[in-house]
Image 1 (cartoon, rainbow, N blue to C red):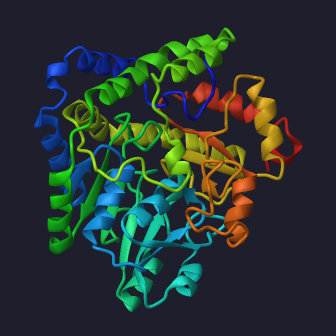
Image 2 (cartoon, rainbow, N blue to C red):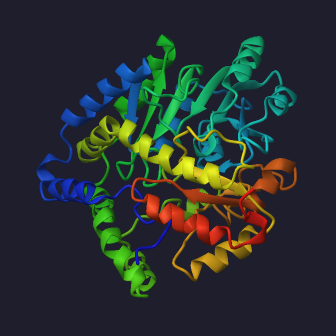
Length: 409
């Protein structure tokens, strides 16, 4: 039985795997620019802005913040329930991350908390559409305009299509996309920054121009990732999948999603990397399929929303994860893991994700964001990715409803 999961190559279908294998067998094409420019044009057309492409979403965010030319002491407001790579990028760009609490229902930054956090040093607000739930960009736009500060949308968890959702990617001064392994779309690694201001776009283009090519051996490891996990999934049903992945990690065949340096409050490298043709080819294909991917997510979200009607999110959203909040999240994850259901996605059990992050290094004071701290402890998120089937979703719902605290309302 294949595992129900968040992180075991969630985008890797047979078609995806075959396309990656084809690229892997043509190393002489890995650094061409053809697919990079095709992807740039597609994103620019759909999101209506100037586009810069990089090897990861965190590189794209760092490049954007560098393009803002933050002075020492400049503050960037971010939400407390976030990934460590966000404050890392702020600090690497010479800024100071200022944490604002979240709204418990949306898991997104609370506009009232943003108002309280603004000072004369505030340069920008980064609003994160957590798990694909739209942030209150309308209110945030008004606040930013009143104080003459920039609004940056973090769209790592959702990329809108013709069906919406409205308000994502259209309100901010800039937006950041991530094409990582478990993001809205995936090219294994990759990211983009989209801006609509000519001066910022010019500075951002220079950052992309100065970026270096990814080392071939690191690119090769990324391309092997779908093949490794395609083999790992059936092995989990045989009880040896974990040992197989541990071995692959031990011989450094699987690059970590978040490095030890990043957990310690540093960026992996101060030198930005370009998005290589090999990954841009995958990203272009995923971009073209994003409505199909989003529709799949919408179908699964609708099932979850019907089963857990007390969750305050729309059933029509193409969520990257469907969030449940429960006092028994840890116990439920442990119980389900014995049934080959793996719901630990790195966003559980922490406020700044993943666990074991040095909060001192990123200037976060535990307990300072009450709602974010509570959500981190209580979150139980359900997968919606392309390889999560409706049958698996129904099985997961049935398993969850065995727990008294999660019975259908």
